[in-house]
Image (tube, rainbow, N blue to C red):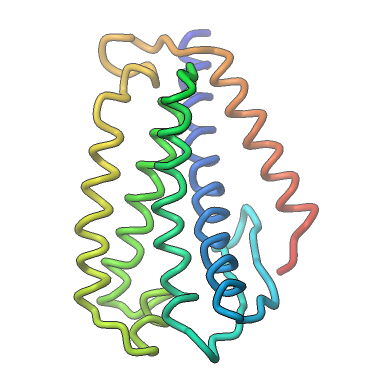
Length: 189
């Protein structure tokens, strides 16, 4: 039963981080679009698709496009820090999520700058320099790995030999199911 909770915690946390990272990333696009006077036509969030925000880019395209990765990497560490200040027993989950967002947003732009896909392709088409995206990736990915350092025992790895907080495992699974349900019900693909 110990391993079942460990597997549940790891798998549900990874899946929840993927969906949550997309939500925070798209929130960054939406907030910067609104803040720069652009119109948001649609936000696509579904568990079986890659997220997307359809917005106008007439006034300040680089602000809107950079908004996703930048806010997508700044907001989660802030929440993690608040969790630590509140002395939450779940700080490690917020820290893992923050690291996940840093790693994936950094890799997305850093590697994407070579392929010209997604936001990186949009940034290149609107005049952003490739080196800024590479620098973004080179800052974010190691920062995310730094946040992950030492979290293994919370996930039953190493000295904890599979033991995890079963309530964290069940809570993570429940939250994942809730997010999936909400994204399916409010699907706008």
